[in-house]
Image (cartoon, rainbow, N blue to C red; front, side):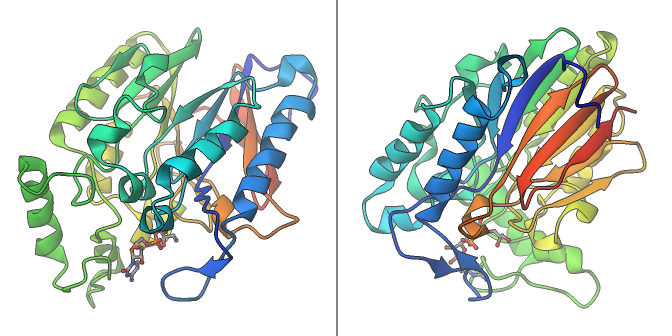
Length: 325
Ligand SMILES: Nc1ccn([C@@H]2O[C@H](COP(=O)(O)OP(=O)(O)OC[C@H](O)CO)[C@@H](O)[C@H]2O)c(=O)n1
C-alpha cells in the first residue's frame, strides 16, 4: 500500500451521515436499517481517528464531507438547525478544514438561498467558484486539484417552482418518469438506467458542465491530477442505477476527454461501490454512515503520493490503491 513513505498530503472522506436525534428507522421500502443517532457517534469516532490515530505528519489536511450531513426527518421536527449545529460541533473537534458537498437531504432541510453563505457553503475555501451553482475548485498542493460539483443544479428539489431551472428539470424528469410520485422510479422494460430519473436525484446544467470543462482544460495544461467530488454517482458500474445522476453520460464524456482527471468520489448509494472506467478514472462511492451499525464505521483516509492515492478505509469502507493513469 506504500504506507511506509510519507505522503505528499492526506485527506479524509465521509458520506451520508444523515444525523437526526431520533430512534433507528428504515429506508422508504423498509429494507435497510438507518441508525440516526449512532451516525453522530460514528462521526465522532472518525474525527478521533483523524486527530489521534495517526502520526502528526500523516493527519488529514482537509475532510471531504460528501453530502446528506443531516436527515430530512429533521425538517418535520423543526430540528434542522439544531441537528446541523450538533454535527458541525462534532466536526469542529477536527483540526482539518471541512469541504461540504450538498446532497438531497440538504435541500429537504434548507432552501438553496439558506445553504448559500451558510456554514455548508465552502466556496470561500476554494480559489474559483460558480456564482449561482454550488461548484468550486481548490488546490491543496502543487499539481493537485479538487473540484466540488453541484449534482442538484438540475433538480426539482431546492429549485423555486417559478425558476427556469425547475421548469427545465421537471421537463426532463417527466419525459422519463410517468409516476405521480416522482420519488418512485419508473423502470422501463428496456433499461434499468431509466430508474435514475427520480426526484431525489438531479444533474448538471450545461453552464456547470462548460465551467468544469474549462477547469479541466487548465488542469491538463498544468499537468495536475484532479479529483472530482459530488453527492450523486456518475458511473453505472460504481452504483445501483437509482443513484446515478440524470445526465451522468454527459459528465462522463467530459471527464474522459481530460487526462488530468484521476478520480471521482460520491456518496448517495449507502452500499458504496467502485469501478475503474476504460479511461483509467477511478469512481469511488463511499458507504453511507447512516446505514452503518454500531460497532462498525464507514469513512476513509486518503494518502496522496506522486503516482497514486492510497485509501485506508475503516469499517465498511475498503482499502484501495488508486493508481493514476
Ligand atoms: N420509492 C421511494 C423512495 C424514496 N421516497 C422518498 O424520497 C426521499 C428520499 O429517499 P431516501 O431513501 O431517504 O434518500 P437517500 O438519499 O437517503 O437514499 C438514496 C438511496 O435510496 C440510497 O441507496 C424520502 O423522503 C423518501 O421517503 C419515496 O417517496 N419513494
